[in-house]
Length: 283
Length: 294
Image (cartoon, rainbow over all chains, first blue to last red; front, side, top):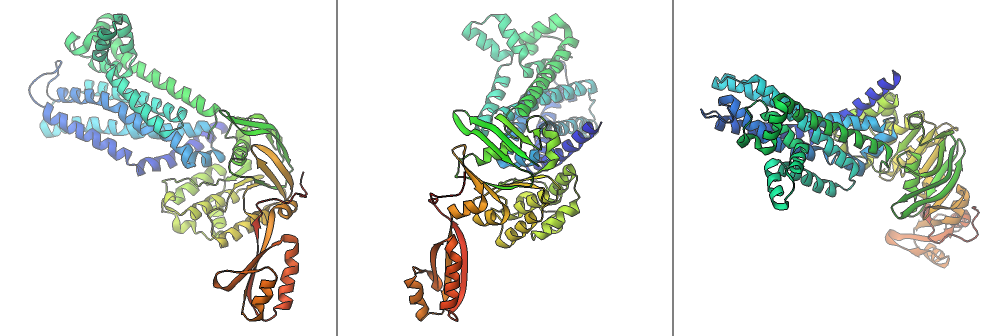
């Protein structure tokens, strides 16, 4: 019990100091502005009487917005986290904090919680706010089920890439290299959705099963399928991988996969990087 | 707290930063770690602080550093050379660290006041906005407000002004006799004031260890500077190897052991013509060959 109290106190101390850093760097404001700008664009453009995958009005705007977020959120999460631990190493804050009774686990947990909150809270504020804005400003009906689905999928994706970013910042000491890897990871995640992979398949003559497996392993593709899982499966909207999986496993399983796989990847990356952070040289 | 290094080694890739370092620092000892850049001082300190994985065995108070860091951390106080640039306000940094150390903010503020720093007044300013000296004072106050049994001080006064350095010396001198102090420093006045033992590292090995007096005898050189009214005093000084510099200050190097006699001669021979005298130590670049260390 004393150990838990001590861990809680240490985590709170790290979180307090790291939150000040997040506020200084204006990440919260930046995330809110990005969400607001995207939301405004899709709401203004999307509130027209045409349908996308069966969605119209506010549903269409939310659908388009969520889809855009799938490509943007990994970049936001990676760039917010891939410089956390290596910067703390270089500027002496890690050395100072761990020279006091602050365990490495508490440090890692503290910064992880703050970075997750800094990324997820603006999302969880912006999405319902846009929906309510649609209700009150435009008198639109809001598909609340889809909204919740979009929020859950986006949050899972954020958690996944936050953990990947923290792993990069822990394992790659050089900040420049970490930034380069951040861009590569994001580009790979965004490029290797199934349409991109079909191109790879044609170019390199990969077997379809390998392409499908690769696509399904990509958390961005999984999240995209989870987002679409409420719609009627059509090849033109789901893409070949999504169409194949939706017909094989059904929409509920597709949603579970799209939510569960990014979370599993994120947890694995986080636990692995925590282990490395605890075992290896701190400085 | 007793500190024991037994065959401690550390490599960074192909570079051996520490090679088979064995040392014993008894409880209550005050030891300076000295050596040129890249000699392994920082690596040794970081190993001591449990921040590195190393070969060999390192015990503090009988506890292996790599076994039970959690129980050791509250008993060690550390002043790093580089003060981090936290974005949080000073009062938050002080409150946060005081909380995990279990000391009161008032106790930290009291120590800071002795270092001529008003934590209350600076409370709202971001820690990163403080000068290097002010940040170092806050970190020194946070360390010295604890009742740790081992103080590890890594060039703790490098950014402090002379008055604050003297105040820092007084605070360290007031630590209980049972407190073990490890100091990384190149400053001879810190060695003279704060430690009784010196360990010299070179290329990752212990190159010399012995008493602080022995180290100073071997490595320190006295410098005497005199400002005189002019007249015959100038010739007297020139005849005794003094050279005249800016603002009429005459200076010469002198072995530390002969400095007191020279000062006495100046007082007797130039009585009434001396405006000011300064005696200080500088590091001798080539150590004497008949040093008293081991």
